[in-house]
Length: 349
Image (tube, rainbow, N blue to C red):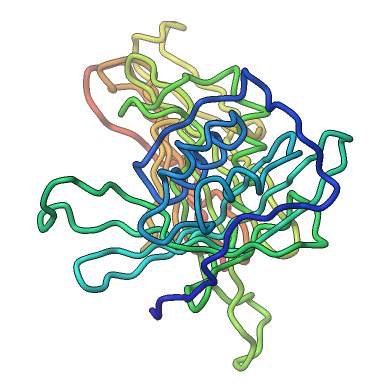
């Protein structure tokens, strides 16, 4: 990656602005933990009229010929908002140089706002090779120019020769939004690892339709598995799929509705018969897992903690969706794991 080069002048005196004190309660931010945090700290200082602090975020190359000229450049500025974009970086000669895309909205005392956009270069000198006094991460240079974009979209996509920011995963964002809107209040607040729910396991499934021609391109379906809840012996998850035809939809799991008969009508006794009397669907997958090699989702629902009675399903990905291909039931509470297959569609095309 090549280091982008910017002009040294970074601040602007906007004609027509009049002297006005900035809000005394503007947030105080003094954060040098990252390049974009330094830029946000700079504008925190400007909004609070703490110009000595703002001046101090720069290294040897200052944004004006002297401090007084720097302060005068903000005569009449009532407030300045800042947005930052995707940061890129490169190392050179004992330093790391960061390129920070920036947009600001400068508002004057009359309430008129102007948008500026550009890039800052922020430098971090290797602390291990420094001698006192220590130099923390600082702004090296930058340039902003007037922009005709709305403030929300004015931040440059990238700076200099740096790579553009990663494309937003729209399908993932839509799936997260749908899950939290539907199940946010029904599921646990954290997963078993202590992380907030709402961040799924994500998979990409590439395939060809059954009627596709040899030269037809592959299609893609995205699969998202969201943890929902953990009980004593069953964990539930919710799945969403996304493709270029149907968008993002919740995956529903087909299950047989069973009529189970026990000897002497005692569920602890011998199983006499199991009959399928219909089918139903469920948005919940219990103790589920997705196998990317076989393109199957398996579920296993324990009817009690010891696991001797249970039901399990296997759902195979075919032509853009998951279909039930096998369902096993262990209806006997006999202390043994001995399921029987009640549905077997594994030979279906």
